[in-house]
Image (cartoon, rainbow, N blue to C red; front, top):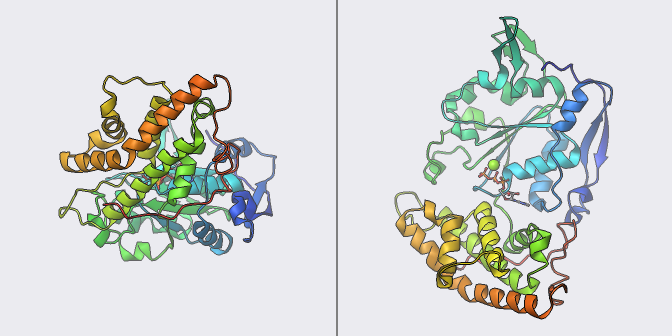
Length: 392
Ligand SMILES: Nc1ncnc2c1ncn2[C@@H]1O[C@H](COP(=O)(O)OP(=O)(O)OP(=O)(O)O)[C@@H](O)[C@H]1O
Ligand SMILES: [Mg+2]
């Protein structure tokens, strides 16, 4: 589909509080609103991510990202951090708050720069039409180009794509066109590594070590992930309402806090290891925690029945991630979670059953916990517990 060029827009400022009440003392961010006059508007609106009220912006991330957003000119932003730290979702949620259309691409080994520029496709008249690729669309219309897993693509590709990283006009050899960059176009890349040789060994095989001239072109933000308290609260807020209403909040939060604590410790331990030396510790990602939370809480509420209840934890961990691991890290993880969680999970199951039996239809939320994790739309108001990091 060909869409005309975006032209008219007005600048305004989004208060920092819109990113979360814990940021309300900070300065706001540039944002803009496009004129509502051209067809590209419909396409642009479709590309503004939907706001997720449970997303919590890390304070340091917000400060650094808004410095880049407000004051960088053509330079792109490089966000590094462990898997599941919130790199991609933080960028998408940023765009949701400031109203920025975004095209998100995930690169892969063997990728060529032309894939970012566009391609010829057959038309029904027996000829070929040029279709803009992600970079060209962003250049024309002032959208944000989000490139995930940056170092999965060959280092040489990025060297040849310096025009994209520098915000220079795009020269499209296939059509002979030169596409000037719209003043609102931004580029963000995310990656598990910082592109350094030392991190090449950090478990992310198949990654390219980046040319320093490429890395030198970016602003850099490191995102480590949520604190234990934030992660536990996030898990709880994402529990569907119908399930949450059937669980005792205090006991459920104890289980989720223990899970988040185990995950924090596992990530810390894994980050300190060199591949090939000791692979006992697998870093538990937030995605794995969400899966484990789903089955644990569904089990506690009676929505899942097991043949062998004594193997609950083993089953939860295996279903969440451990079945994908080798025997050693798998056993280590099952043992660790079992030791930390076994008792808490039993208590949760018992209390859930008691609540459902004694007060059918009544709200089972425990008074002691209802202020700490309310089911409102705001992700704020939590009192995050410190990372423990004492396990392993
Ligand atoms: N700060 C946060 N607030 C809310 N949810 C978060 C946050 N950080 C991570 N998540 C959740 O964790 C999951 C993984 O996040 P995301 O995809 O952003 O991680 P990532 O750092 O891009 O990981 P990867 O390196 O694997 O691409 C998503 O479900 C996301 O919503
Ligand atoms: Mg990502």
